[in-house]
Amino acid sequence: MPERIPVVEKILSANDRLALENRAKIDAAGLFSINIMASPGAGKTSLIEQTVRALGKKYRIGMINGDILTSLDADRAAAAGAVAVQINTGGDCHLDAVMLHSALNQLDLNNLDLLIIENVGNLICPAEFRLGTHKNVIVASIPEGDDKPHKYPSMYRGADVLILNKIDLLPYVPFRMDFFRQGVEVLNPGVTQLNLSCSSGEGLAAWYTWLESNLTLKNG
Amino acid sequence: MHELAITESILEIAVRHAEAQNATKITDLHIVMGQWASMVDDSIQFYWDIISEGTIAKGATLHFDRIPAALTCLACGQTYQPDVRALFCPNCQSTRIQVITGEEFRLDSIEIET
Ligand SMILES: Nc1nc2c(ncn2[C@@H]2O[C@H](COP(=O)(O)OP(=O)(O)OP(=O)(O)O)[C@@H](O)[C@H]2O)c(=O)[nH]1
Ligand SMILES: [Mg+2]
Ligand SMILES: [Zn+2]
Image (cartoon, rainbow over the protein chains, first blue to last red):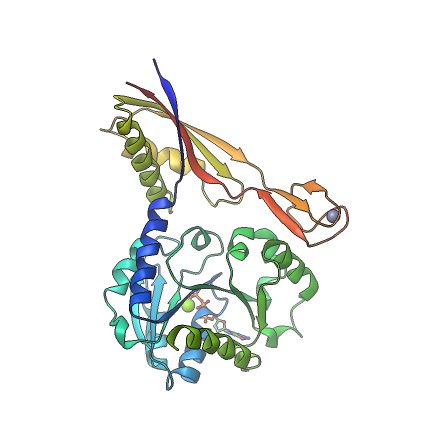
């Protein structure tokens, strides 16, 4: 006779367990880590380049880039001065804890202060997979439109800080700032939002302040 | 594309729980999947048919219990399913909202033969 037995286990529990291991490893090396997620072209790599140029003299920065095929973004981060590692996901639409686990082995973590992970450009899948980093950074951008939080709720649910990039384009692209923020507020009440432009540099200082205050907490 | 890894995870969890009960066969799996969990049940089914081959779960039926997103407005108390065009309260436009359901993604139960 078939018998029904309760399981009630999160299907992503294996990934979550490995994410905890990643976190332990990162913590043991005493560095601060962020997972940057955004749609394709929102400006993840641009933000990393600017950050490395601005803070790279003061902090040793490592970068892990997940890309479906190329190493262009890792090369850009390396050119800016980061120690960069490329993970080709081979068609996968996100990084998961397993991929990060093997990438961590390729970096000398004890010789870094800040670890930046650029996730695959995608507003849906990366949100489901914890990596083990300390903070999730979501990059939205003006030309994507103001409806994105309303349409991709899970991504915005998990953000620890929200960057709204390309504000230099506000004069040219219709974008209802209040409508955007209403969606964000429903999903993630009170989350810090930093409006900035990686092109003009406007607003970047507030981002560096956010990063440095977290770095100080972590590295003392 | 991430459904292969997900399906492997479902299989691993099901077999582990079934073996703990000394099961010889898994006949059914009941998966609870919220509207906001970014998973495609058709792809899970597709991979399932391939990877369950050769295990005690071979041929088991997958049941997907889909849970719509439900939000409650903390300002006026209204519970609603979010419109595709906007997430805030349709009654009073408040953004003080609590997410009640929609984010589930778990293996709820399995049916086994011993
Ligand atoms: N106008 C404007 N363009 C920007 C800004 N930031 C980035 N861009 C441009 O947007 C494009 C995409 O930038 P990337 O930094 O490569 O974006 P990404 O998110 O890393 O893209 P993928 O990794 O391919 O998903 C490039 O052409 C950048 O020059 C900005 O603040 N303003
Ligand atoms: Mg990039
Ligand atoms: Zn209301």
